[in-house]
Amino acid sequence: MSTTVIPTMLQAMENKDQVTLQHSSRVQQLINLVIPNLIKNNVISHEEVADLWTSAILHDVGKLFVEDKILDSNEKLNKEDYQYMKTHPQRGYNFIRQFNIPAKILLAIKHHHERWDGNNTGKYPGYPDGLKGKKIPIYARIIKIADTYDAITSYRHYKEAKPLKDALNIIKKGAGTQFDPELSEMFVKSLSNSY
Ligand SMILES: [Fe+2]
Image (cartoon, rainbow, N blue to C red):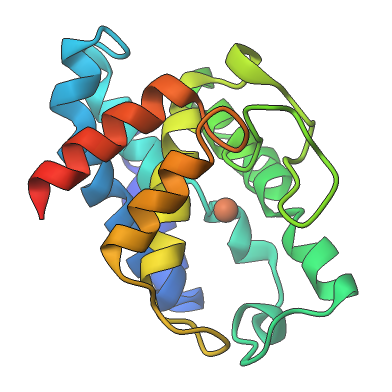
């Protein structure tokens, strides 16, 4: 893998939008807490840890192509801006595939907003492809849970941060619909032990 490109991308993300980079870094840290459990349950191998970390830190790289007025919005996005925001996984994938990066990382970036049940309509749809179950690449399924957990527990201009126990309950509740049920259980177990 071309390692020189990653610091350059992180620098570009930091220049564009520090909130996203801080979020990605927290997602990486959350995944770190679950990695021992993922390895113990043969979800990933030791050799895959570095690629999972890279996927976690780069998962929102497509936000480099989202206008600042949308990223920095102080309010909940309107319909049109939300639709645009939803293009960031595909944009990230299109951008990053020009570099020599393993397919597993590319697919994690593209599919980190898919839902386990494949539902691509409603308030929290899966996108961009409406993939279902194990058709969703494994790193993407892992990132989806950490991503949601961090979104719930973080402050945004338009919403308060919720307590950790609320986030754990949402992960439990979304097991089998939003999230891979087996991974959800591993997250809940690992994160409950960590706080
Ligand atoms: Fe995202």
